[in-house]
Length: 308
Image (tube, rainbow, N blue to C red; front, side, top):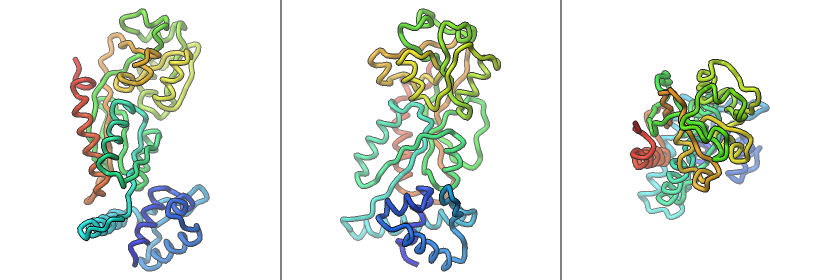
């Protein structure tokens, strides 16, 4: 067994594709596939499930993945201790529902890269269920997800609360709803402003459905993620409902293209959670990025969380 075999299987698992892994590793796909099959024969298990849509870790592979990561981390530590100047760089993959991207994610990644110049950070936008699946299968190291206060926490992950905020109506300053001190559910339905909703599968879609009691406005749009929702608001297509920590400090808010109003008589809390798979050992880079998120959230605490 060779170290590069373990690195190859980790790359295939992380990227979900033999083709993408081969491109990253600068190998031909047949050579990579044969190397992985040799490792599978040596271990006596099928590490990957190969489908037309891509390769994913098998159940047996998921059980062995923590051990593979432990070996690779031990090799990295050995190389570091020996003073190797060209240590293999690692990648950390973060899945996000695109909440608090500007105040939290971007500053955290910037600070992490300054401290870890050899480590690549890949940010993947996805729905919560997709993030959870990728975390379970080893395709993601960390996941940023929204969570409504009172929802059950999944048992398969370690969960850290980063930010605590409230749902707000995100709108243009010249919106007819911007003249209100607070916006009610009826205001969202009365047709003065089209409603831009998150697509089914997002927490804010579920929240809005509950807020409106299943009713829908005469004119509405659906989209993927807060960032596209804010752009649509800025372009005058309507208003949307987002956590306040997704709006406050956004460049569009800072330049006056969007603003926000509280929802009337609503006490719901939205939590931004950082999740990772439960494991005996966590790669050092993923651990350090996790700590960087926690540190940045603590810096923001007085501004975005724990507000009356």
